[in-house]
Image (cartoon, rainbow, N blue to C red):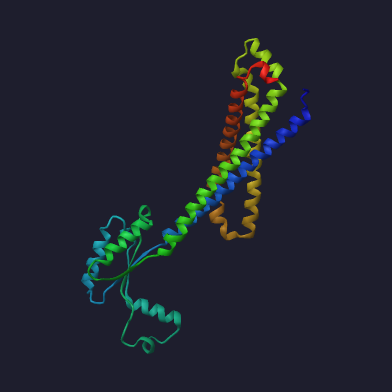
Length: 290
């Protein structure tokens, strides 16, 4: 069988494009998930627990309640905020553009409230529910609320998306692995006589593998760089169309991580795929190679 140089070059291009596709998918999904988690953390940092107090509580009792809350481990003591019900009423009436006296008279239906912010490590559904349950059973607490819908719907969906993304990356990686494996088999078959001659002359498998592994590293680098460039073209388009997403989908730190990560992953993946195939086929006897 005569080996075609043109066919080898075409195969090289296919491998580079395949690795580039894998790099693009990994980069996009990484940026998407990174943006989703950044957005999630931004929303979580704004999530508060609203504690509404009974009207029967006096000023000294309210101060005592705040001091007790400051001692709780899950609460950020520096961010505790007390809001007087008179201020709440005025803000409400200013928003509705109604006359305060005519609408409410002497009766203020609002409650004094304390706004709590949880520490980052406690911003999860379990901690919010635990704190709300304990506070509701406390004396002088009228009601406790927090954004339950967000915790029930958005965060679990982000986890599902993350799992689906990992599965998708694994499928793409499997396809690229078979392409690299077939590419390596093609080269081994084309050079089968030379390889067996080298083995008969005492050449080690490591010596025989060296040019194949070197070429796999080069193809991995080319594929990663191509994938990174394609990804940045996509980011540039998104940033021009929707500038508001820039903070979530593009930042220098993520770009550095993506560049280094795709280079490392692509090279290691290409190297391991080639190495596994070489180890398997170099053990085949000379007669079976034909």
